[in-house]
Image 1: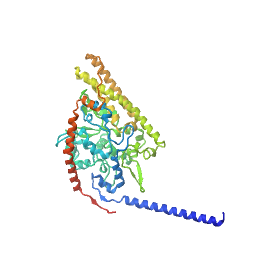
Image 2: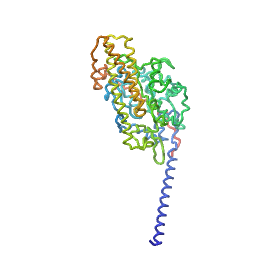
Image 3: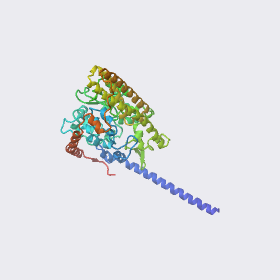
Image 4: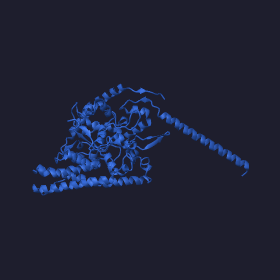
Length: 500
């Protein structure tokens, strides 16, 4: 090759490198400009402003990803983001919750964007027609909306919990969102539910000492926890939201706490057992698992970071990591996606198998206990049996009601199911002896409950009446609540501070 040709090639290569460097510089400059533009505040956000769309004016990427919580396009082996009728899938649950609202209606949870729709539509909240009516207390609104901290700030905590669910309906409008977890000025993570602060105090801890990484789980722990309504303290007669954390965060600690104060959520309509209803102890179970012990937070996997236009931000499309393993699991784990998901399903399969067996044992225990009562058993004879049933179902419920528990802490959840099975078997052994003493030496027939409708009929629910009441409520009351919210939020106004 001649020197002339060589020189031309070097010249062209130099030009190409210069052009590429210029393009790279331009791209970096564009991203920097876009970055600066992205965080130019557009409006002034008021303290505890419940309107998610107002926060979205300043943080459009986070807001747009939050709106994706209304998607219904993902199903894993056992869950997903779609409405699934848990009672239809497992009719045994109807019998386990006989006498309690969950026997009427219980669906698998959907995204945060559906929080208001789902609590309004569920039969558990009934069809109240006027203030002071309906089956549920106002406390049931606590985890559904950023209107809750706004209203607590306006009328006080105990006053918010006071009264019926209907009574606060016109005040609660926006689904779970920005003001639930963020400070309006600094965007720092913020605890807005007093029950979590009070639970820390009951353990001798100050939640203000929590690190930023701990806060990335604690904002979730405002709601994804076990709780109960304390009608004795701090205000007599008011169902005050309380976490049973004084003795610790395990299922045994909470069980001891409830036993010590002789608390029950309801009395089972068949067995007459003073029952405990586990809510969703997701945070407590998570704390027993390896991810928590390695310092991983809820947000690390359920809200992984993403990048758009040079901007790195937290994805507010809160969802199962199985829907996005590349950004959640594979940030730390190098295994193939298929293998990671198979590991999750393997743990879930084994625990679900044991939990399903326990469900059927519990159905038998409740039915056999009813038979014993029918044959004249005394309260003294039934007391140790009902205690076994109470503890067995509490452990089953604690294991299955904690979102993702069989992944978060599979060893602990497996232990909980096994100890629940032990207690259910103990109850049935005692029942067999008692039934024999009462002159009944045959097997108590297992009820025909292979569908949700059959199970609800078996425990005596009038579903036509319940559904008619709900339909009337949605037709007459819900439009009034929506109109009240529209007027209230229009009066709040929006203060624009930038036209960029």
